[in-house]
Length: 195
Image (cartoon, rainbow, N blue to C red; front, top):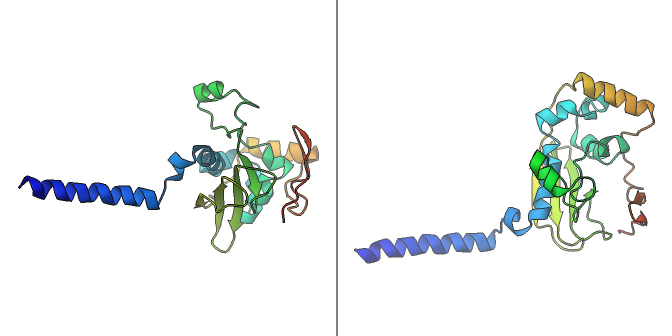
């Protein structure tokens, strides 16, 4: 009788262990990459989209437009702060602010050889989704892929005023992906030599 209880319990435990080995969890195996994905994903919640200039400048709100906006000067101003650089991690935790990990880079469309850990943000307009992929190294297979849609919202009055002001000051809202990656970073100029 005892054996009948032990064998099924062992079989379930073995099946779970096998499943976890074959289908690893990016949340536990790659926490920095997954936190970066979460920070980008949170930008697309309804509450955050209402505060964003995105749907003021792109009323159709296509995924390709969001990716272009995200990497523009206007869109990058809406990014979460970078832990340790723009906001101490302890302060961010205390204030419950989602921050980008300092050792992960967010890049558009494809992995870049300039960076080790990176989250690639791309789109599929035919499916109507934004796609995030996490990479431990640019030349390796992605360790996870997540998709989400962009909610249709009406920007708040403050978002509209901020967008108009920033556009008047010359901030752009579209990204030229052919030249993206050749801008300055905090260490000087770096050159994107990706294929």
